[in-house]
Image (cartoon, rainbow, N blue to C red; front, side, top):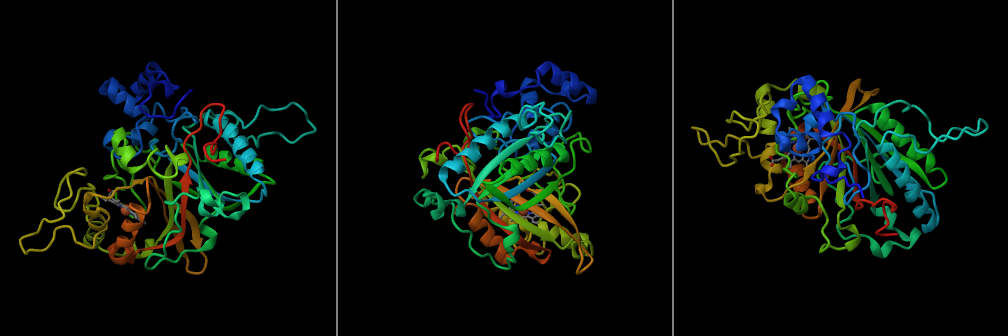
Length: 429
Ligand SMILES: C=CC1=C(C)c2cc3[nH]c(cc4nc(cc5[nH]c(cc1n2)c(C)c5CCC(=O)O)C(CCC(=O)O)=C4C)c(C)c3C=C
Ligand SMILES: [Fe+2]
């Protein structure tokens, strides 16, 4: 069985020699030892201390991330440059049809991850082509496809109500939420990430196409970050507010950290979720024009970090430790208590794995302002203990709230990975 476990060398389809050859183009390869090359090729998402962004920069930027494995890819996988994400509502009326849908989605996804069409092409000119075709000749581009189930999947329709995982709660209404139904929920979520926007779109479009008669699109959103080509050094990407975003993500290349923060464990309930994770999606609109008129001091006080270096206020290095108790000569906290990092740090005890993308949906025709923001995505083992208390704290006092509004929301149980011959969801139905 192939695996998407980032620690497993057998999952790498690009040979070490190829990688070194390619990396040599940018002179990066020579600087990396064998261990360094491993994480550079396929280290987990999270802290850019492990050069995760560099993984999408050169040698492996067009490679294959195996679809089959203990865990679904697209969770610990170092972030690709683009996302195309959608929620579906089921029109299927039987569990057998739902199972068939996941079976065809699984085999199509495994092929898409390898840069193939969803099916072998038939040469019958009287039939529509099996695949829509816009990925012809394109490389796999590190495509990952990650599937999750919303709470509504467990309603009365398919006899699975008794199986709804306890952590898959209905998210509470948070202070100043302006959540819209058209950007929220859904029976199933599919997160497609790739280093090419057309490859990502193609994958999602074809999944929607083969779902015909069984599921329909509910919402869809594309997102981006700077590409690996634009930043071959792989430094932490900046969000649309100009700040480095992701610096203090947990280092999930340590299996124990990933198990503690991200993966549902066999001892957790329900056991069919073991190896899976809970994904939170928040569509967060940013009032960019207002932000752009605020002073640098105000911006830095909002996040509690320096804009240029990404360092915590009063520190010089991006990865320097946050000292939240430190006071200046006047006795004021150096990092304001209502700053985004002071609050989201949660005494260092509660952590989530963030994997969000910027989005831009053109212009708001009513106001003439940019309709843009953050497609916030995070993974956690139990949102009741991680995301929810963190967001409760942020929603009530974060200085960032002056500039943002949460307009879409979803919580999804991301199933464990599938083995070759199995299908996503086979531990449940
Ligand atoms: C509930 C969880 C979080 C939401 C929602 C959220 C929104 C949000 N964040 C930024 C930008 C930054 N966030 C940063 C750090 C950070 N954010 C969260 C959680 C949420 N953010 C956490 C757990 C952390 C790390 C805290 C820590 O322990 O240090 C940063 C600083 C750099 C970094 O570490 O990534 C930025 C910048 C935006 C723009 C946003 C909504 C639009
Ligand atoms: Fe944040």
